Image (cartoon, rainbow, N blue to C red; front, side, top):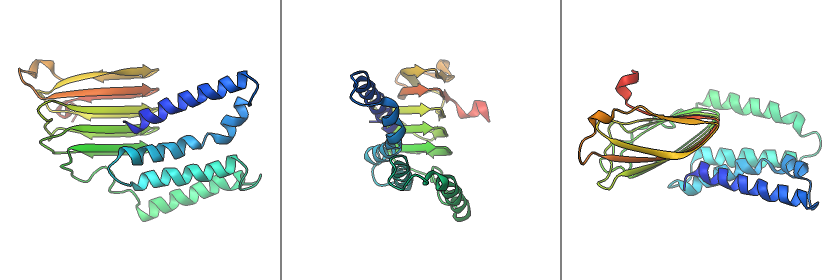
Length: 227
């Protein structure tokens, strides 16, 4: 399952449980959310590992950042811990820039039949040239992702792309002649399919796109129209 979709659904269900317990006088929803919200960052990292075909550096970073923030919000590091959060964040960002971590993320040529990508507070470009492309799972949170399928070809039964974007944007580039079907749930967000339907003929390669858009946008288009 798409990491972002799994995270979003789990968080909505968890919030429902917390507010039900608050209504019953068991807990204070404000206190619980204020102390435990970093669990969502840890969960995103774990979900991405589960959805991918192996460990990812970005997933490890999300888990470590989430655990660090959780230790701060729950008081494990003491009441003065917040004074060190922003300086620590600036140090990490500086090291990221100096060492060039992640500079190859999302730009390595790929012939993979299955593609997974995630962008958090940043951007990434994913591409595959597989002639038996099956599926892609893309999650964008406060970031942007471009999924380039212009050199790919779906399997005979059609390929599937699952997209979740929260306060972010995703662009999917497809060749002319593909039959694109897009469906999903927009929550104060939108999607737009500008592919050329007149170029679709009998037996055309088929791509099904499932989207969950919250305060973001998804575009499906031909690369040539926008260069």
